Length: 327
Length: 269
Image (cartoon, rainbow over all chains, first blue to last red; front, side, top):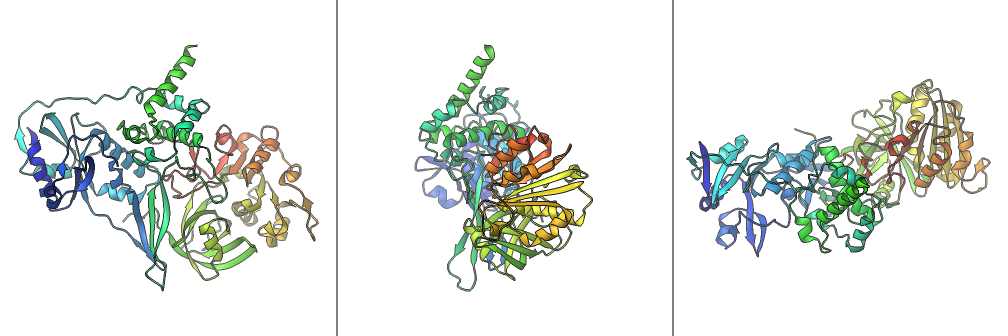
């Protein structure tokens, strides 16, 4: 037996779930969709739950690595660890689920980033999309839209099973459809890592540096860009001792000062920083983590003020490499 | 409960040495003995200002003390230099990989230090003073811009009894009777034998001069080591600030053999 839920019931399901813990879902506000905390007030204010949305500006990586997060608070020399509350992250698209699951892996592997994995452990991931659930990725529940306004449930964990106990799910007997998501042939190119690695002296990096503003938006909107800076914030209300917090915030390797110490900038040129961005995603990530650092969500293309498209860049590198190979 | 990756431990300064106007050395009392290898580093933190990576300057004697040296070049290092004996600070580590100690056993080792570069190399010198038979021989070449920038010079007399020590300063100074000139002037004094190992720490121009003089001709690429410096923010291979080509300086280094970084276009940038 399979379990399904109708689109009209999902808002009530979320309100029910939000009685026990925080629930975040894609909500359309001012013609933009963003993950917002679900409560009665939200939906009564005219904002609409949006389950088939073009991407959110900020990817859901903010739930593992918030744009700004307190690693700990301090008062004098006393250090107090921050705590994390559990939450349900509902309505991730196929690509965003891939992004969150892969980011979880990155923070867990090698030396564990405990603040990030702690957040990850407290998150229940529920994805909603038209495709069959992805193989080999961690999630709690996947809702597949098998026909308009009808969703078939694929639970993968105890937390997922628990959500299925809600009265809004009904049992039906149906054949489980299979809809595979196609992978962009550029991202699936077997020699992509090698081609990008060998492209350091390709003229394209100079050409991109002419166009690129070096603003870093491609990193901020990327579900798999996770670099960060750590700084101390100080409160001014206590005259007796220093009070404040050590915070980490998003950074971008595209910014000029990213690799600069107080005495030397190790990557001062924009063309090198652009190459480095591609090098990390398409050379280092496959080597370090076993996957390409792109989930094909298109955010960096949509929000780049210079209209740079990574597919055009990679496509040209691949074409030039194949031309060279043919000679 | 899992240990928080970025939580510093509070430790106390028990001794402060003022080397010159911008450089100080601290002896830090640890709450528990720290197990580390020469060449590893720690993050020092001043709450309210931030955290910086510094090399460990003392040998791994299993004691409850750790030596570090800091030059005031940025906000955090300036604040660190202002601390006095008895003050508290935060420490995270040890981090990174140190020198390949098993490989160094029984070898003729040459240390080349430019300026502040002597700090992490001093951990190997202290190791040698404690275990003088571990290396076949130890030669130390130190260069600094002036006499007061020769760090730990009050210890040189002791060092010279157990190792071959050469120093140079950039310009002639009153009271200085040693070599005058850039560090490469000392390179011919390193008695390179078959199987000698060179470990150097300093600036990129200095690294290039070491490569030019020693690599290929006198010392095998795999026996030539460099301690790279980068902006190491997290120290655990996540924040991405210290990447150098395909490596993280924090977790893959900071010690790299020339063999490993020879074709890395970012290594000596």
